[in-house]
Amino acid sequence: MQRLKVRERDSPSFHMLEKSSIVAATEKFLREHYSPVQRNNDEKVSGAIASLMETVNDRRKATQWILEETVRMIHRSFEFQSLSIALRDRDHDFKYAATTGISEEAKKVLFSIHYSESELFDESIFPHTSISDITKFFMSESEPYQPGEETTFFRPVMLAKRRESPEEMLPGDYIDFVFRNRSNEIMGFIEVGETRTNRLPERSTILWLELIATLLGAVLCNRLEG
Image 1 (spheres, rainbow, N blue to C red):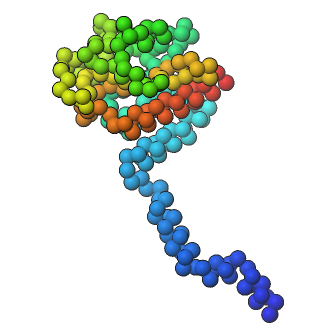
Image 2: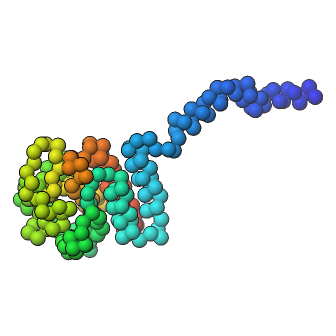
C-alpha cells in the first residue's frame, strides 16, 4: 500500500490536483479568451476565409463553383454593392467569370467583355492609381470604362455624380486586386465596386481583399497548373 501511495503522489494526476485551482483558472481563461465565438468584423472575416479555404481545396468542386463561392463570401463579409472575378482564358484574354450585385442585363454585358493584359492596366485606356503591387484603384472621374460598359455598374445612372470628399466612393469607382501564377503572370483579378456606405473601404478591408486574392491565386494555380 505504501508503494502504491508513492506512485500516486508521483503521478501527473496527483500533481495536477495540487495545482487544480490555477489549472482551472487557466482552462477557464483559454475557453473564454480563445472562444470560437467571433467578437468583431476581423474575426468574422478570418473565419469566413478559413471556411472558404476548407471548401475550395476539395478537388471535387469545379473551378466555377470556387469563383462563385469566393464572390458570395466577399459580398457577405464586406460592404461592396457589387463585385466580380475575371480570369485569363486560353487566348490570354481576361474575361469575367463570376459576379454579384448587378442586374441580369448587366451580367450579359459583363460576361461579353474581354481585355488583353496590355489593355487592362494601360493608363491611357483605364487611368488608375496603384495602391500596391496587386491593388489598382480606378476613379469615376477618369471614366475608366469603354463605351457600353457603363451598364455593368451597380448604379449606372449615377455615373455623373461629383466627388465631394476624398473619403467618398462614387458609382463608377472600382478596385482591382490581381492574383498571379507561379511565373508571376497575372491569372485574373477580383474587382469590387461601390460600397453600401458610399465611403472608401477601410484600410483593413483592402488588406483582407489582397489576402483573399493571393489565396485564390494559389488555389487556382494548384488546380489549373498542377
